[in-house]
Image (cartoon, rainbow, N blue to C red):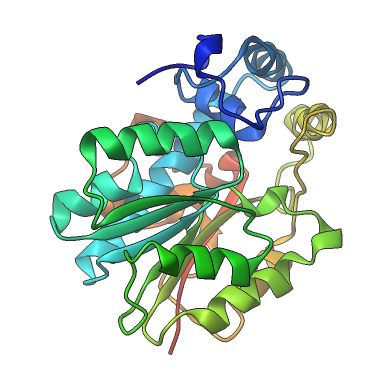
Length: 284
């Protein structure tokens, strides 16, 4: 796969004037779909908050456990919003390892993420079962239309909707709870909603808390600032859905039986260290 280091492969629409969350996250995970401006930002973030790379891995591992859990429940089609740059543990790869006939549509508004996803699927995917869409998740009806136009998803059967490590980039002005509610309404009965969110609710008041807020200030200077939300605000995303046990919890507390690496297990005794709340809801 081509990398962000080669200017010949800069997708149309890429903003190289400011660092971007998808490319920074890719750098945190050890990927190559990023540019110097993203790496410089990431390095400064690590200086401010050295644990940030590990926290990124914990978030990625939650996604993997969620897809594993859903696949074992019989969910065989996924809509992954804010899917980011392909890296270790992509949704379609995890789902295919459990059900070789699974289906997945990736959606992202970052041209680099979309371009790399297309390369990955052209190389290793199945065009009848896998697709990628360029779009903004804040427009549910447009995303839904584009996702269905791929022919990959069957709206007569349950779908696993994923918004992992992305909702905190939706600003309060864009009313994320209404956005999510529209997706919930569009999903067929029996579908699931898997999501995670950064929070400063329940984080110890110490020097680390100050570092977390300094990180947020740094992201305000990027093209993708993020927003902390409280446990109550996060739980509202599941209104009308049945929360799957253990409910809304810290990322390292969620279904470790589905597999967890050293990064996640390292913070099991202090799960709020992850700074991320997670949950899974089912539509009745």
